[in-house]
Amino acid sequence: MAIFRPLTILCVAALSAHALADDSALTLSGFGTVGAVETNTNDAKYVTGTVQSSGVGKSLDFGVDTKLGVQAGYKATPSLTATLQLLSTKNRDNNFNPGVEWANVKYDLTSNFAIRGGRIGAPFFLVSDFRNVGYANTWVRPPVEVYGQVPISSIDGIDAIWRVPVGENTLTVQPYYGTGRFKLIGDRDGKAKNTSGLNMTYEMDSWTFRGGYTATSLTVASPSETALLGAINQTAAAVAPLSPALSGSLTGLANNLNVSSKHSTFAGVGASYDAGGLVFQSEYTQRRTDSLVANTNAWYATFGYHFGNFTPYLSYAKIATQDRHQEDAIPTSGLPAPLLPVMGALHAAVAGAVEGYDQHNTTLGVRWNAYKNLDLKLQYERIETEAGKGNYFIQATPSFAGSSVNVYSLAADFVF
Amino acid sequence: MKIIFAMTASLLLTVAQAADVAVVVNPKAGVDSLSPEQIANLFLGKATSFPNGAAATPVDQNEGPVRDEFDSKVLKKDAAGVKAHWAKMQFTGKGNPPKEVGGSADVKKQVAGNPNAIGYIEKSAVDGTVKVVGSF
Image (tube, rainbow over all chains, first blue to last red; front, side, top):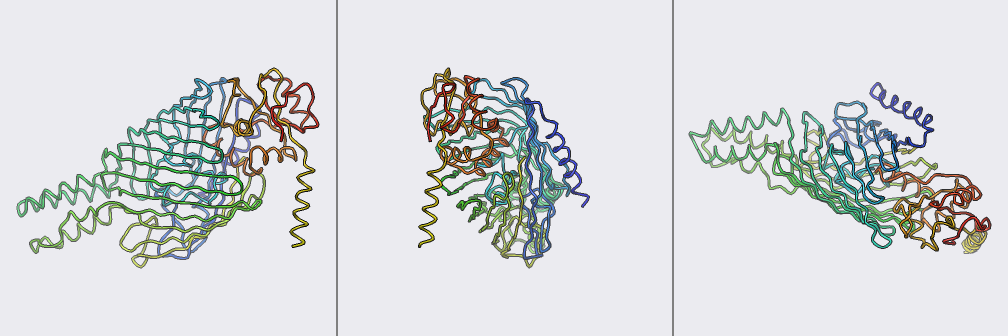
């Protein structure tokens, strides 16, 4: 339970600050979730993305969804606002030490045009900025199949928010530029430099439409990856006297796989609707990078209906890897006999290292607005994986291949 | 069938009994009327100025029947829907919910004293200190 201590401290600090915030220039708000999750298997662990390194199996776990966010805003002048958001959620290092999600200054040049600088939310998805605010979402958490594709939630940089009234509708144009940093499961630390993109939303009555495109220069440093690339290059050098062609193709493969300043893009379109009791939300996204990191297409669609304070919902999500198999550049037949075991091992190592994600997820759940700023959600997910392909589960045993998993979640979300 | 009829009848009765809501601005605001969409945009933080370009400051009522009526008729959301909307707006840095100032009398006082304010009150509370720009 010691790992929950930072969460408790943040909670107490937030509540006392909330009580002290009488000055109207200072606003304090927060959000949080207490969530419990279990699955029906111990052959692999369920996680909510590529950041958490300990997941959940058959025994009930409170770490996967539980989180607390605190946001402070200070209006220095009518047009100058500073915002700080701290988020405590279970991280790669298995603790709840709070991270700085946002720390930026916003300047309103007009009532419809603002610029921001500092650490800003990275607007890669329809619900990027409130993906962690359970209360603002229908489901327990955004579908991992789509939201798991990008581990960056904020960038250090600048953006502009330009609101264009179109009749009674509003178009919002948001260009941005900056650097994103992230830590992934295992030993991988990443950086997305020169991240530039455009996020556009169009609000029409109860509809919101969104389209966005991002390009970045991606680097992921990982000792295990460096070792693999070293092994490929060593093999290339060793086989050079026997077969210069094979050596060349191995060197080329090592360069292709290396995630070092590789041009990467992420694009997405989405729509949401909430009126007359009906809730609908859907997104389609594409991730592209010329490296070890797999190219993926992913989408989801969610439907719900408000029956008073109860909103039952149904959701389907799918992610599919688009790469040709990079390990196929390593021949495993038609070679001199002594090379066969080496190439076989290398083929397997590359296949294992290239992360692919292929799974689909059918979700059924119900949200209950239990109190004015508190909801309770019960959610059932059936996640189907594919044998021989990657997925978002971790610590999988060989018998897990091609398995389907039931995930049961119970969550209480609040805002204050 | 009888039960459904009784429920429908009591529902209609409830609607008929609910107080009518008047959306009001300061007489000096220079605003004659607003569409339900324009009012909803102001109260949901999607717009920050009146059609004539002047800044608009919405003021909210405390929770109660008048607010419920306004939320469902004009904002087309229930109380939880409005709360969830503001949770999104707040945590995307797009704005904070309008200030809650009290009941119809308090809202009227605020609007009468501020040319930029817009509020909603029970129709029966309307007097010469405010100007009605929409009735629901």
